[in-house]
Length: 120
Image (tube, rainbow, N blue to C red; front, side):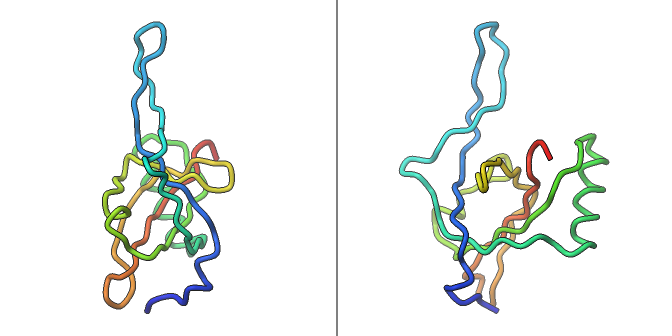
């Protein structure tokens, strides 16, 4: 079921992975804004206990410290379909690492990003 427009009440920004090199020549992960910026409105919800547990278990299995998980649901656009799992969502002063991307809504007119807050 497609969400009503009023449910998209959180402004998010998508950032593209842009590896950077420091003065010592070491590559580090960095992120840059899309040009033009990609700042759509989203419906953000924190998953059910089953979804949160599955995300945490997967991240622990990958050797990554667990963090807070959320699902970002947006109206699907051509630009949003270019987002990859190594990009991030910037929301509430934190980077959220994208874990999965899936079509949503009755006619795939929405897209969902499941993400985990970095440093949580």
